[in-house]
Image 1 (tube, rainbow, N blue to C red):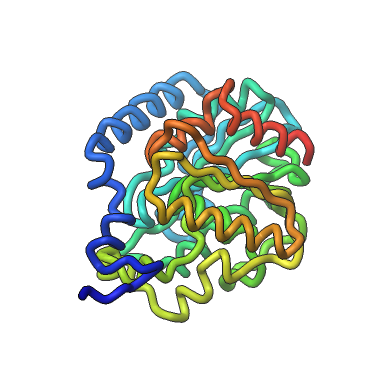
Image 2 (cartoon, helix red, strand yellow; image 1 turned 30 degrees about the horizontal axis):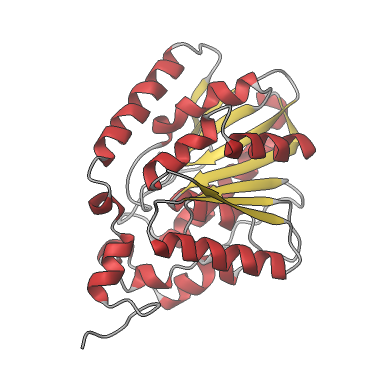
Length: 287
């Protein structure tokens, strides 16, 4: 009988839970649409500030899309299993937030296998700290900075809100709240999966960089959303994390998105009439 590695899953079953591209063979169509729509947004937004360096490495950069002076800011962290995609694939969210009076930034970070997940956590936290310092020059309100992310980016957004996460400390109250879509909150199953040769997760990295193990002592509100058509592991991860978050006395909520898979769930973030977009607007406006 095959050995159970995680939640009763053997190797084949665990890999099937985590292999999102195999589960959604049409994923390349989503990637192409995101890139195409994002390119059109950048082409039509001359005020956007692209490829702003926010760290020492070339990958440590971001795109900034302003709203009116003194607007709040939503900083978005892209997914791709910590090893693919780019900030430029997610410019397409910016117009919906601008229309709601919210500035938008899309962040990059170094990818695996060249970088480890702990290094990515440090880079993203450093980028958020850089944004906070540059608020006056960029024109947004530093007291209303929020983070969001999808998939691996949901994990990284949660780590921005975590306590003692990595070597980069953020100013107190730098982040007022966040949203994680289709996030990973416990890295242990990844370390036992087909992803391990690329991610190279050590026991120390799992402990340090699993958001469910790094709950903050206090935090702004966190919204977690997952598609109803996503694998059970992603839904279980969200359930466990939100329960732990709330049991720690932290403000947070969970949403399940009907009819959405792992790749269409994130689209809801930029759809003005979708409940997830509306929830994020409410979060930002209450901050």
